[in-house]
Length: 192
Image (tube, rainbow, N blue to C red):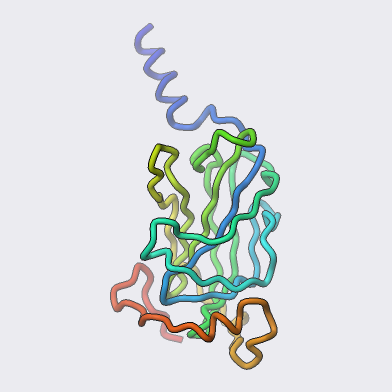
């Protein structure tokens, strides 16, 4: 009897019995040295409310609030979240692509607005893609659910500085100053 209760509790705490989400809160961020143009984004074949293409620049590596802007929309279905992204690092003109699949039960949840999960998508140097969120507690702490190195996508390389007024936020992104990329990064610098 005790064994069954312990197993059931472990099963519940692992998120295996978590309901399929109703809503998704989606936000984007970048490391301070890496502004990006998000070219394509999908979560379970839906944009999740993301406007594309879009410029992103923040200081996710320096601040507790790691993303800016939030899109609230319906959960794009399923017990898993397949996140796919294509982006260009604006200062290097190098494009990357990545995809990662997460269990929806592992995503941070909020008690408001039904079953709502939060997904923070953060871009870092040399194709780093971080899928994060915040722990649900009195003083929420950032958590990283996945951290992967995207693959180079030379076919999507582009120098957006040639027409900095083409997209909203692009001129401002190029007008800002950025620190150098740290020599110690999670993902290695590509050779080309």
